Length: 334
Ligand code: HPA
Ligand code: ZN
Image (tube, rainbow, N blue to C red; front, side):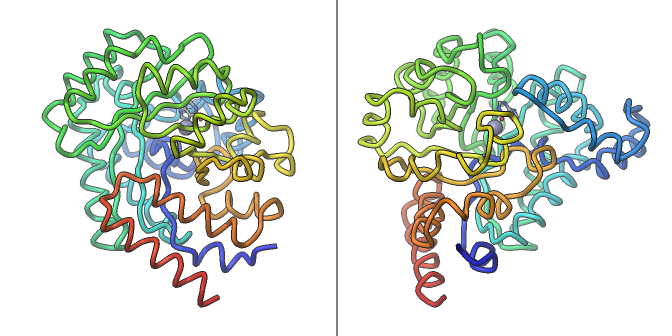
């Protein structure tokens, strides 16, 4: 099995990380104190004990409640810096992070407070740790199309600092088709597109993400494996899948990490990557996710997963080439 030090040392990108999902319980209490906000848990231990989920919605309920302690630009800056410090310790050299503006604007926090705080944290992390990053604006799919359009409008002054739009929150009952027009408008504005699909939703939602949202990358995608034609389409097009093993375990997408389909995905020629999703809630950052699937894949496949993380990123070709050379040099030297 791949050595844990090799996993940490392997240069890697993280492509599926909800910054609000990196809010650790201790930090939640400290932001709550700083902003004089009540949280309905008496202690960090009791909050952590509530992190037992049997499906996506159980998690989302507590995740949105947790995000309510984030109010000021400084909170978003500090949240981002804390994530980048952990990611850096795990060997992440590039991260493309999701944020959920509607979770904040619906509480009266202006879009700019969120975006400017995160962008400041991203800049500071690059100076401190050398980690490069990109920002991805996610629409909450349980809200309606008009709300997504209003969010896209609010984001316009930041379009030069936002790499892509994404789609997250409650998947079942909220198919990608609901957002085809807003994704079309984002594309017209020059933004890339990603979407969560096939986490709990059926293969048809993955087809819709491809054909109606024209995604550049697919988040999760586990249930695509149920449809051989879809697997062929994904493999032939070189679509990147941002797979999140510990999230899959915690949200009961898989019942045992030993039965996680990562090896099957690679065997079918899918460009899978490993990511942490919501690390503060799911029990680990990116290296923990690589460690979780280490018994299922070879050392060469670990290297492939790290290579895929750069191939699937929104970095330019020269940067991708540089990172791939660093992965190969590291793997060759160990
Ligand atoms: N799925 C859908 N929405 C989310 C997730 C997820 O894993 N994490 C944060 N929002
Ligand atoms: Zn996610």
